[in-house]
Length: 253
View 1 (tube, rainbow, N blue to C red):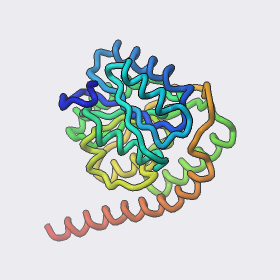
View 2: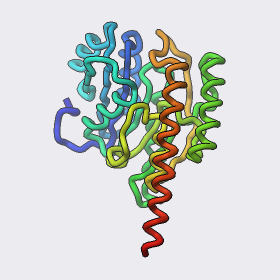
View 3: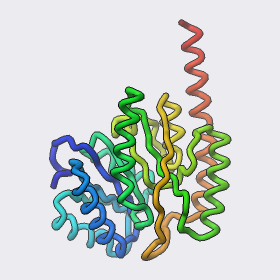
View 4: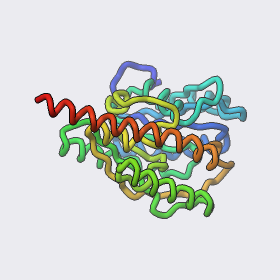
């Protein structure tokens, strides 16, 4: 498998999943078809976050059939951020693309975001660039849409991350930049703020959003709400500490 070699690749696609047995094969087929046509040297890393359905069994079989697929597994559920970290740590790609494993993110948007990332990285002259997907027309329940809008509005005001939809799974960023960030549970929702804190730039790009074909979300609205409040306060502290440290260093010059 490409993912197990030491060869550096252009792009690693990280897909965290939990109990998504019915969505695995269709999404993997889409990913390989679209990325093969793009001409990008890539790998796909699926990280199973302690699934209790047939997800591990199916991924193991698909890994043997799909040359660019690598299957990683957590023995129990550690959360979406932990799954993303596991994938990025194992990745051989210089650039990372993430997307959700439920099929609602459109793989066709990955080459678009990847190309935009390369353009912005060249302009900025830094790896600390993130291209964040923005679901302009969401295909979710009214409750999920409203909770997401409120959370995004509160986060933008408090963190000043200027990101329209931080909950969108589609993001593209440099592996090196991600590994340089502070890591904590639920950090994936604060990646834009952390990139900006490090002196980087985040751009929101509209992406397609599709109805879920099978199953239901395994990371619920209410547990995201309560842990989100605690983590939001922590990221606010990190951001303010970074600004204060920068000011103190400037005063010493």
